[in-house]
Length: 303
Image (cartoon, rainbow, N blue to C red; front, side):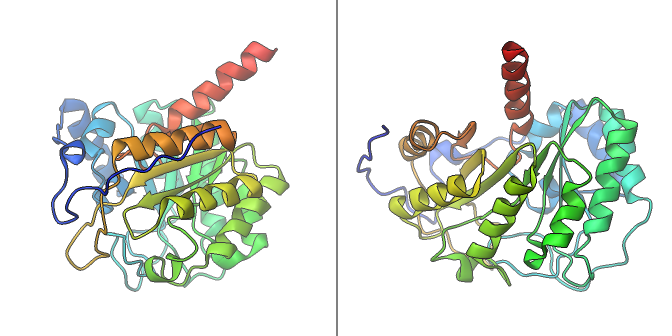
């Protein structure tokens, strides 16, 4: 059983510690990928959310594609994606997403979206169309979706699930106590029910994740992980929150690599997550393909 250890507080929250300093490196592959995304009029959460791993991921030809536009109807205090009145849905987007993935020749892709509370189904039908377009054009590519909560509407959640994504993901983002401060128009227990519904429905893999540094305690993080495991979550990710601008939620502290290691051990040894990613630079879609590949290898060994 993983043992809880007391650690010193992280570094000054106004200055990033050494373990969070990343050098962006755009090679030719990254530039080429950026050109494809722009040409097909697609958005990526990598760019919109100012992800620190963008150079690494784009450099090997992977990206998290963001559908349903680049404008969110919610205003979460941690998120760099712009908020406002979204444009009309692009009917060509599912085909363009599939074309981009085919060009990149990906074995696994992560697709996410802005929240579209302005739409009756929250964009669920568009989600399903995109998943099916990718499966049709790229039959060897596994699809991971990172969705919003669809206001908890099970019919809309099932519309997405019926398109059979290989991984269904919805992020809790933070602990129950901090949700009202961090996530606009969201509810911790509603998100848990989304995950639980997906697991009970029969999703192949269910995934969630949280950010650290918003003011949570170690006990609260572990409580959140236990709640996710009880809901049927199999994959869990933990990373450090980085404030995108001075207008966003203040970083309360930087968690240390040793603390992330403790959480990884807790998730694997105590809770039995099939895949547990925990580290300062971990994001929900970071190295997402490795978890699915590991699962596939394990299944082949059982045959």
